[in-house]
Length: 70
Image 1: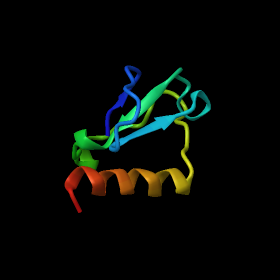
Image 2 (image 1 turned 180 degrees about the horizontal axis):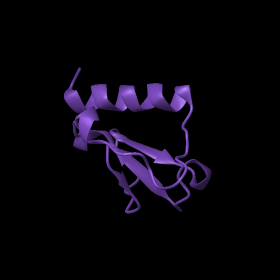
Image 3 (image 1 turned 90 degrees about the vertical axis):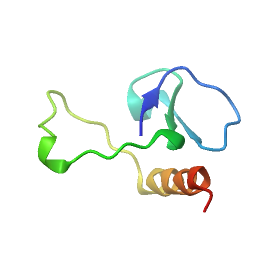
Image 4 (image 1 turned 45 degrees about the vertical axis):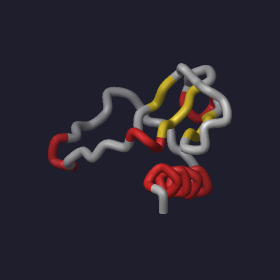
């Protein structure tokens, strides 16, 4: 799911993240733009990644369902 800093409020498929979750001010995940990436092409990050909570993962899954019309 892409992370964007150009936010539009009240979009049912967007998850708004606090600066503490991303390190960015006013960021949003867009569930309507999900991409699939093969695990084999991923590399180790250069910097420590931030973790999001299980509740946030469930919220993202709900937004994907909305985007898919399920």
